[in-house]
Length: 141
Image 1 (tube, rainbow, N blue to C red):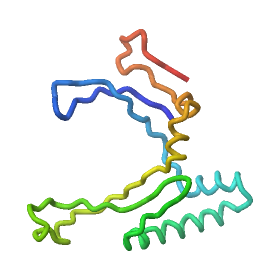
Image 2 (cartoon, rainbow, N blue to C red):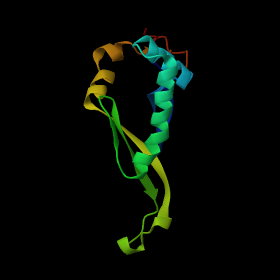
Image 3 (cartoon, rainbow, N blue to C red):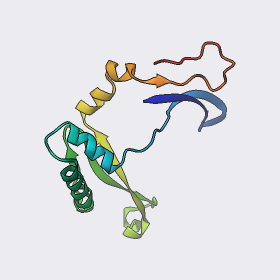
């Protein structure tokens, strides 16, 4: 992972600006590459893996629509959450007030631990400061 430093305003106080880390997004990994990489680490062909992943993606909406969170241990749990307009009373709230649904992905404790491990954090690279006037900019490897 590569991080860059960006200057952002505080939403509560627009005059207050601070630097924060933001990820530098690489190219998205597609289904073909994912299946190929998984196939290299097991005895299942990339073609079969692609079919399984496609079938999983086809079935996932049905479970979520029925209100079932989908638990993918030890990775995460996936569920739907509605975005709706607020109403003063419960009686006023109806299905028509639903604006959309968003996907909530909650990592498992094991996965959280993996992405917060010292080894993972040590592998992060930080781009030089955006203003190269700072001689103390970090370029960690």
